[in-house]
Image (cartoon, rainbow, N blue to C red; front, side, top):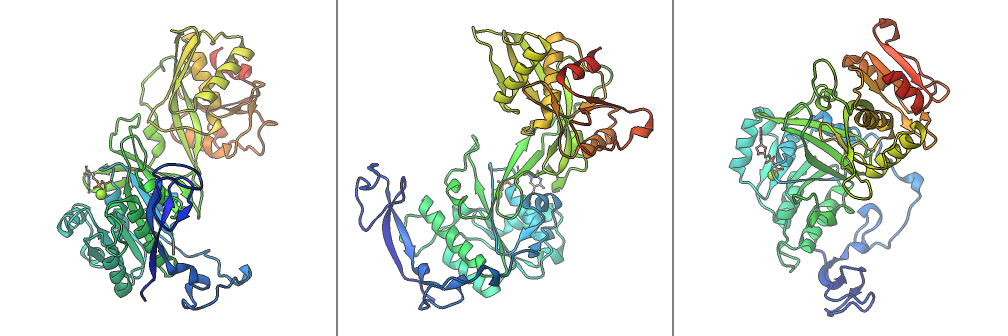
Length: 469
Ligand code: TYD
Ligand code: MG
């Protein structure tokens, strides 16, 4: 089925279309923003593409549509499944972004080998030769029966890929990478963003109509910007980012996988991997990664928070340092916790504990390079700042969770029990949490061990008193 193609010139700023090239967009007035864009005759397709090209466009009752529920497949890599929201959704397209060398190709090949799919798997490599991919498969220890169901095709030519897709009808397609895709039919310059968008759109249209799921890899530049592929984000169902993390435990091969967009799940989950000799492996107890192993006393300025990353409780070490402000105004330096939140917590300490911080520069770090957005870290953040300013260390083996209100109260949190359990499992013997009344339906899990001390706290004053007295 040959599609009719024509070209328009589309403004990159406002999306206005012109039949011929103009130096200035007549709609928004921007200069040099009109780019040649291919248009296909897709608009004529019937509902869900079932009717032929000649069919009159028709809408249909929502109730007549089969929900996508239940059509997930496991990638065989549990951390990947978790970030996707419970597995790979059929008919979906997933973009996997990350810096070169972070492990995108490795992850896709491991998922291709382990995926619980009945049909074939097509691995399209536009960057590496078949021999290189085979070498990686051997390094990963992929067994022969797993590698024999992976079909490999080494080209970025869209038309060839579509021909192969039609012939082999795979259940899973891996495209490595989106940047190497090109189409010989568009008449567009190879390597341009429009070329890539066109190819990605064609491939997404293919999987939307079949029992197939599609992964693309895309390189991002060092400063974290997806160059070009940023423009693919609105087309795909899920956008995953693979990023490096340097955990407190000193393991430099640690990787985080996060979703920044997910039409079929939450974007709160993170997947944690380490890259080893035999590829990516799961981290059994991720909490250990973010804690610094110390014997004896803690240094001042260090507090441990039990936070939730997605559905998983993590124990993280928050480090604070306060020094007299170098300028006339004090500043907050914090790239792992939002600086505005640090300022709010500092203001709360100043107001409710009468401790002067407005003449101090405050530096905040989270061991392990993890970014904390959850407000449950407030209490530990406040304790770390207080400890740094007074030079009094917190007692060892103490963890805490609680959100700090502007009025100085410690507010309740969701899933307090699982946080406490995670802390107890890691050997924390003392836990501060929002006082009942502030927190609902709390049952203390390991209270009867005798060794553990659970301290409900109503406000920041109570908390500081119970820790430092
Ligand atoms: P790769 O998956 O090629 O990264 P990307 O596709 O994101 O560019 O991974 C490349 C790095 O991972 C490379 O530096 C080698 C390393 N690596 C391992 O340490 N162990 C392994 O088993 C594999 C396959 C790669
Ligand atoms: Mg690669």
